[in-house]
Length: 146
Image (cartoon, rainbow, N blue to C red; front, side, top):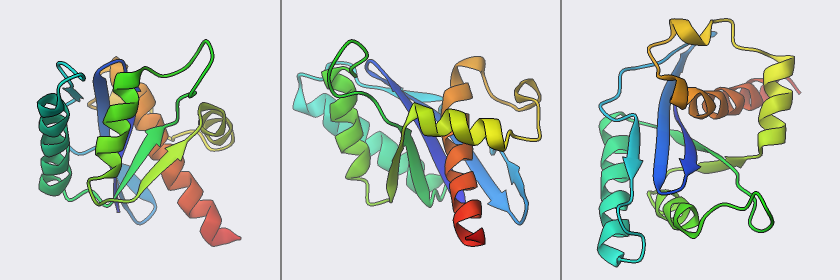
């Protein structure tokens, strides 16, 4: 199974791929570490983001998407652009799982990755995207055990 973890920040989707084979995971190379929306007020920009994201998922044979859930209102609310990006991601034809930061934190505390993040071929800004993909994987494992 191959999962794409995504953290949405402003007009940027930060991406980390994670694949699972048996009991091990690896982080495959990806041509993009992030995708951006230049002007979310223009329909063409959202369409371009949607096309680029869908093409990336197709090229890397991604099975599922894990997305860090954002607050809809209040001080920590996500931006309008990030919600437009989320909608474009959800329309790509893949299962999209919204995972709250609290759930991520609990899963990572119970079952931390058995690898040092610095040893992975990822940039520091991709850590949250990696963690949400890893959290989805853990949810899959423990759902089977129940």
